Amino acid sequence: MHPTDPSAADRPASGQPGRPSDPATTPRTDTSRSPEAHPPAHRAHLAAFASTRGAYYAVILAVFCCVLLISNIAATKIIGFGPIVADGGAFLFPVAYILGDVLSEVYGFRAARKAVITGFAMQILASAVFYLVQISPAGPGYEHQEAFQAVIGFYPRIVLASLAGYVVGQLLNSFVLVRIKRRMGEKHLWVRLLTSTGVGEAADTVIFCTVAFLGVIPGTEFLNYVLFGFVYKVAVEVLLMPVTYQVIGMIKKREETYSIETDRLRQETAARV
Image (cartoon, helix red, strand yellow):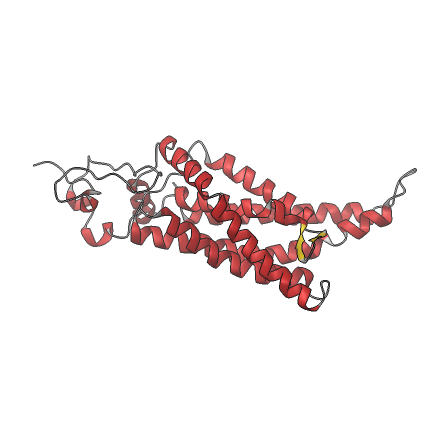
């Protein structure tokens, strides 16, 4: 009698493997284990993920942290295009959520949480360094101390807003995405991406805008700023979704540990894989 493939429950009645509806690759499964190793009730809650020790996790984590740092420095400037009010971080910040989606979809919630914590540790370090530079006396010939203080002096408030908003928003984004994936499996990736982004960006935008710019941007312009920020970030996610699909599909194919077995090991042994 042949061992049962853990993904057999997802196959058509004909016994032939079905084609996935998404460009992302189907997870690899370990066929060397007996049916008893994966009781049906437990297997229903498993999903395919890759180990954080794989080839691409460290690269994505580094890019994620860089995007976060650059966006928050750029956010110290308010920009306006006619009636549209935004901060400078609007140009790059949505990419952080796309990278968060990639981390959550491929590596799981714990891996995404690690990226969030690492990113904000770098934010605290950057804020501390900028503060030390700001209070240090200007050297001979340096005539821009006041301008430097006007820009960088606002940065700690941006960091506080980012810490409050992005920790909540990104963790909600990852949590929702992974929960939906455990329910739906590999199919309908677009549902996971849009739902998780909508929840995460809503929380992030309201918290960040309130902490960073309440009292700085007056009245109805502040409401316009919050609304535009949310709509803009979600719109970028939608426009770049084909790219997100391709990136996720490529990483899933190249990460050798991407399988349901990785998630099983995490749950049964609490291993950091």
